[in-house]
Length: 228
Image (tube, rainbow, N blue to C red; front, side):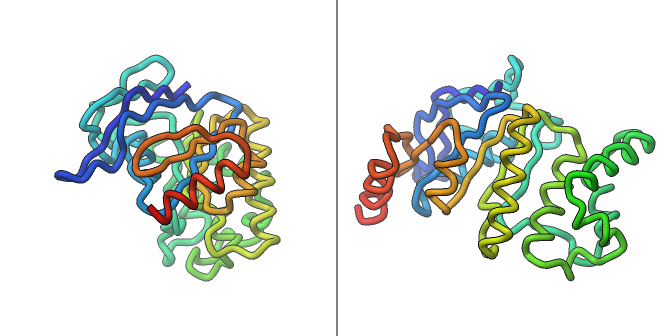
């Protein structure tokens, strides 16, 4: 379990995240929703070790990682907003890059597992990442994250700019990964799909977690956050 307790992140005098507490559990999807500037990215970056919190603690499977350097492994796979692929690399090269420093025989095994999950990538191993469709690029970004065999997966706006069919594919993959036991933190603007897919709903407003409630309550909370 990833346990976040009383976490705060500030940029100078600007408090981006304040006193946030939540758990990301194995085999569950935790959806984070909120308007732009609500603190979603600050939460993700802090959990990944990319942003030093000003207060609070983060533990991963019982180990305090709050002050770990960002390069230290955390058993977390990350799919950033916009996918952030190196367009000049092939699909095969991108997957190998995601494996990090694992042994070569493990790379082959993990690549086979990713390709079995994403058959659309198996047909494009020698194709440049920059020539993939939006849906294919998203699958590659997820596959790259899975190459490190993480226990947790952070997805930041994975359906941004995708067609309805590709969006369906992404949420299908999320359901499969949940069934496989991964703990998933999902930041997603598609409110209805995110809520339907999630076991836990984390609503951020002005950097604070507020009570979620049902879909109508969440929509009203976000509307208030956008207009206040």
